[in-house]
Image 1 (cartoon, helix red, strand yellow):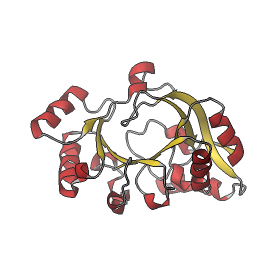
Image 2 (cartoon, helix red, strand yellow; image 1 turned 90 degrees about the horizontal axis):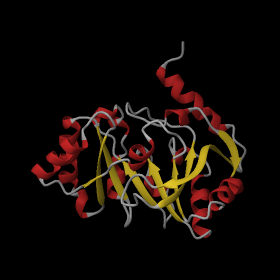
Image 3 (cartoon, rainbow, N blue to C red; image 1 turned 135 degrees about the vertical axis):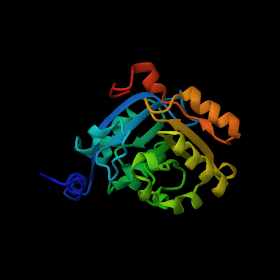
Image 4 (cartoon, rainbow, N blue to C red; image 1 turned 45 degrees about the vertical axis):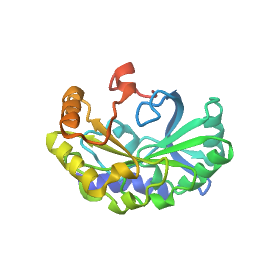
Length: 233
């Protein structure tokens, strides 16, 4: 029987075996952006495989181990082929991919507006200029709070956003106090997202209004449109 740590490390080993010109890709598809301040915009999603975190509410656990090598140029041409110039690189954890920065730069050179959704455990200084980062700040309820690279909060750039997925009122209090203590709302857009099936969005709105929290409610539009288990949307 493998341990939880061995289960995490096994997919990471797959990245080391990649050809120098390839990424490990789970899926590439067009949809509408479901989250962040870009919600509702047509968007192409490049979902990379493999993640170093195991959040208890993860809705893309299939990306932990399901992925195929794809040449960088093929990833770019596939994404551009949909004719949509907003592209999000997500995962999994996209910053684990050896060619992550190259992919970002190729999409920028092609005239795309590029978003990166990252779990927040890696240094966002590695994200090329011109790319907008959506940084998850893991709450205690996620089970991954110790993995937060808190220095990222000092390296946010214009257009970047931070997202807190909340699993309980305790998570809400934790996120509220961190936002106030770091004065995050003065430097970036703060998103409070209710974990699907764990926090009632209406209840979260009540908490935010009562406390005057300087954050935006972040709902996962794709789950309301297609349901919480539909893939490729």
